[in-house]
Amino acid sequence: MQRVRLPAEQRRQDILNHAAHLFADQGFEAVSMGTIAQAIGTSRPNVYTYFPDLVSVLRVLLDRRLSDLEAELTPQLGPGASLNLSALWDTLGQHRQTLLLLHCAGEPVLRAERERFDVLVSGLLRDVPEERRVLMSSLVRGLVYDTLVQGQPAEHALTELAILLRPAAD
Image 1 (tube, one colour):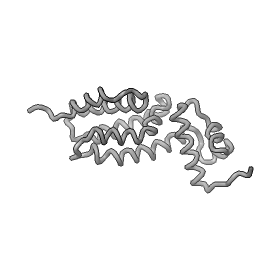
Image 2 (cartoon, rainbow, N blue to C red):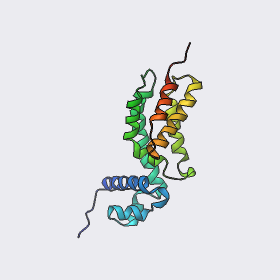
Image 3 (spheres, one colour):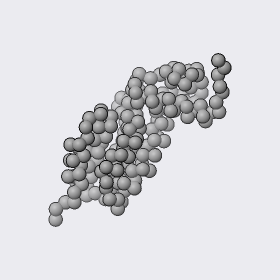
Image 4 (cartoon, rainbow, N blue to C red):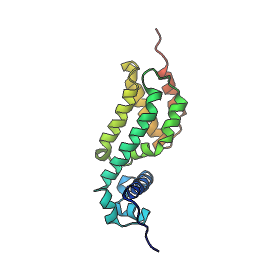
């Protein structure tokens, strides 16, 4: 069987797509450049042609995906937005793989990317009073981790978030 030579950008995207699935399914530490190469039917040196190391692959993936997530969350959580928990949860669910990628590696590797997500959530909640913003931001992060990453039911945490979002009594 003859190998098909892909254009550079298509090969790079193929590497990213396969790496995303491998990282999300197996965890960052279980994946190697060889694993990615095998998944796409190419050589390990060919993968190194596009990315110097695994951390670079993961960072490119998260940079693109967090930008997409931010673009979708801004209208839902930004200034003047009327929060719809169901729509918020649907959006986060559509980005489950991105959220899995945020948690697929040990602390040092993804610290900056997780902090970027935390800043995104906190920044989008800037119209919420400070004392509630910290709690809401923490609860959203906890919800994301418990339900989308760990697969636990979300009902209890969503109820708590809804209570927290109610306007403060005068």
